[in-house]
Length: 168
Image (cartoon, rainbow, N blue to C red; front, top):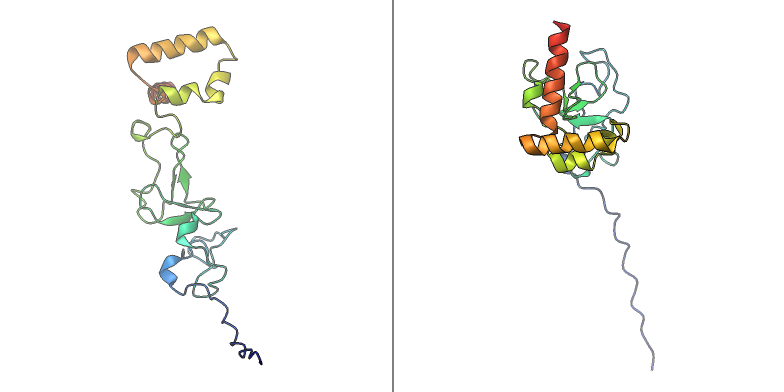
């Protein structure tokens, strides 16, 4: 009895990355040189129509050195001269698409990053260290905030308002 071995099938072709260019980030206004802003992006986004294998997928988070504008939601280079960032909520703003709209919000409109409520303040080591590890004063602050029904944002607004008034 003879056992017949079938002829091998041809190799499967290599899987190519998806060719749907809508699934990739496009270069921001600073990525291509020369540009209208005379600033060179240190981490340019690869155009998927040029090199799809190195292009950044939309599902992979923002490409290195880039962020989504907190106002217009367009992608922009973080280090660009037109970019601004709110030190309170840590959102960045492109300043390009709508110059009168793409900028850091006013202090009263900002939402603090990682300091939404009193419980966030309690677990933030920097806040405790600001008191020089003085537990008595720290507890006075927490009791005051709890009794008044206010949170960390109110502290920031009061301090920044006092600072602005002292500069006028």
